Image 1 (tube, each protein chain N blue to C red):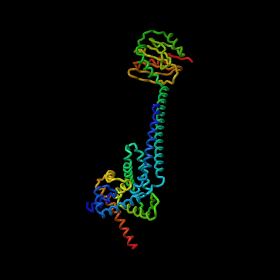
Image 2 (cartoon, rainbow over the protein chains, first blue to last red):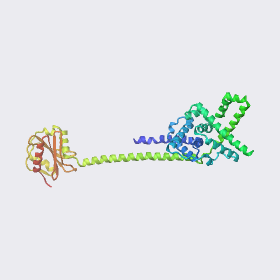
Image 3 (spheres, each protein chain N blue to C red):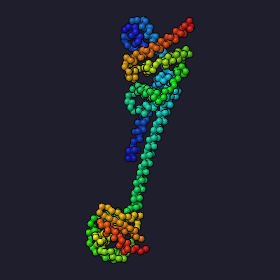
Image 4 (cartoon, rainbow over the protein chains, first blue to last red):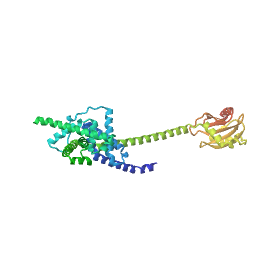
Length: 186
Length: 235
């Protein structure tokens, strides 16, 4: 009984070290994109980080079930969407409107571009969730229509229609804003 | 590809490599312009979507996981500790039970066990042993029989629960009665026990305990009374 106990820890700890390495790779490789996606889902940085924390913690607990590293992204997205849904089961938060929060860009930008980005962000954030979610899968993760359909469990035609409407709404909102600006300036 | 179809496809996936869409754009400057506009818009959207992750988030993610791990392993060691404590309590419980049993071993019960174990060996003996012979053996325990209780078929030292004792088979009123004279050594409990057909009673005298076993209840009681009067132990 004791000899078995003594011979076991090395393999357990090397398994553990292996798991640890995989987890670190997962965190370092995907946390930024996962955070962005969470941010665009909930439109609040603090809540997004909370959800990402829960997502990665859950990922750690069931990391053994992830056999294909290529599937890691969609696996994490699935966990994240579930965590987000759970959040709504627990409590309906008052979401801060995106206009009220200044979101830092990833890179240093000129004032002009920054204003443009802020405008675009406000427009993208104002899209309804059914349009925003597939759009962000495409924009943040570079997913194809088929991949989005898989991830969201939707039919591909539905996905393509939503993507079209999402971008069309963004375009229209932008054109309208430019129109107003043009009239003011002119 | 008509105009509406083209616009839908371009807006749904601006970076598409779909050949019919690219061909349509190549053959129609207006479509090409629209596609270019949408692509430009898309790259702006992609750049605008790139909000910076909170500073140090990756480290917090790793830290939280290692804390969680630590907690889990502590929980595991708690379980091991609990199991250890349970084992110790279990062993302790068993020892206490054993110890209590050893402390209060029933003389009468052991007398029956002895008789059963021996079978006919002593009970079938049919010697006629004189009182002086018995007294010679009793002297070892500082005891003496002062009055006869009837014929004595068997008188020998025996091992009564690892204690050297005197085993007698005596004539009772109806049948043979086994008697054990056990010197006080362990903390025996004197009691009355019936097991199957066997009756067994035990009692303490000054230096030894007496155990009387027979398959006839009345023989046990009478022999017990006789022995209590005839056996004496000097200091």
